[in-house]
Length: 239
Image 1 (tube, rainbow, N blue to C red):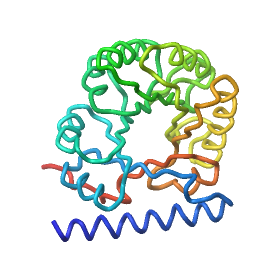
Image 2 (image 1 turned 30 degrees about the vertical axis):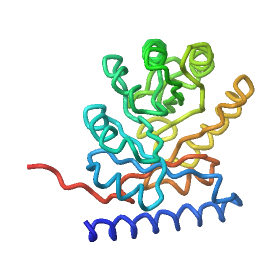
Image 3 (image 1 turned 90 degrees about the horizontal axis):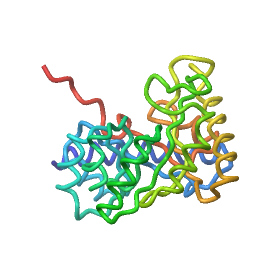
């Protein structure tokens, strides 16, 4: 366990250096960017070490992995983010442990989240996942609503009991006009965030950037970056 702690501490320090350097280059303060460590596929023991190392935000993308892990780490001072595509039949479980759902992309999901948040007497933050590879009213390949659907979805969340509109999230698209243009994609997300905040001033979270492109996200103005492999390493395939 000491060896793993040293590995995670070293990786975390390198990521912190990258974020700090990106903030300097962008003329931003380091505290303007929050690191979310994506702990999917990694054990609760890693989450516990990360917490000891000062990490306060962790993310998961599959409920079947996340639910037992969150339960095992329930006493830790962590904010849990759900970042995967979320089916409505998993909402009750997810609402039981997550603080923010970053992948809200359809009205049916908003309805389900609201119902379970009220039942659990919790307030759940919602980020609208934006698909920059989608047509004006389509959904993206990896989920997400097209830019034209943001306003309607935000209004729906704002009016839903137990939910809160916190901002926008995107994944750099692999197809379409922004493929291979991460900085441009994240700048587009920032423009959409400005539009959103006209109607919902408190929705100021912008979650963008991962291990390979966090610098571009920070340069564009992202408030949160989601980093997995750069902190935790590449998990060996089973079999």
